[in-house]
Length: 167
Image (tube, rainbow, N blue to C red; front, side):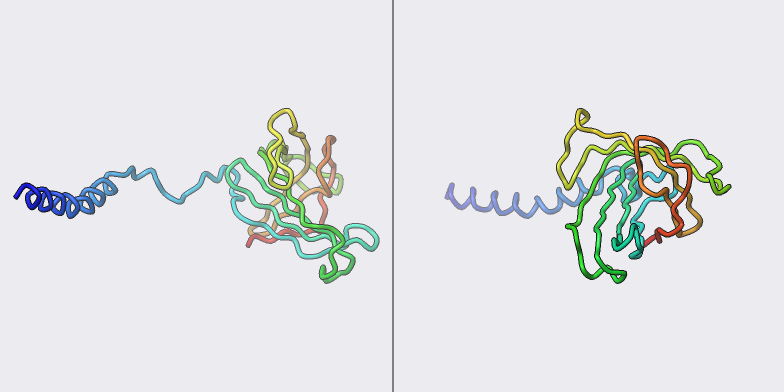
């Protein structure tokens, strides 16, 4: 008799679990959403089509912005179609911030962008392995131009051979 009572009690409790789970999930915060902070209006993936980076070297890449974080994925190729790779894909990641607007060497207004890269090909080297790099950025609708590379000294012009399109 005690075994039958225990069995009924266990089944009743099992039936109540889904109801409790549903009720608890309904108590979640309305703050939980897929909306991410986009302080600069550039969140998302930006892709550059294959272009000649230097004689007989072609480049293709993607920039992925999310709030204050950036991942840059790049690869080099031997042909204009970017079908014959001469390097593995590589990636760098870290934080960024967009600073002052400046007039470039060609007379166009762009914004300064500062990077603090600490992730190389998925490995986080921490703050002691971080590298600060500087560049320029300009966005117009779904088009982005960046300086020709990022370096320890801020470039003075944008690279119009490399047009990034929002994906």
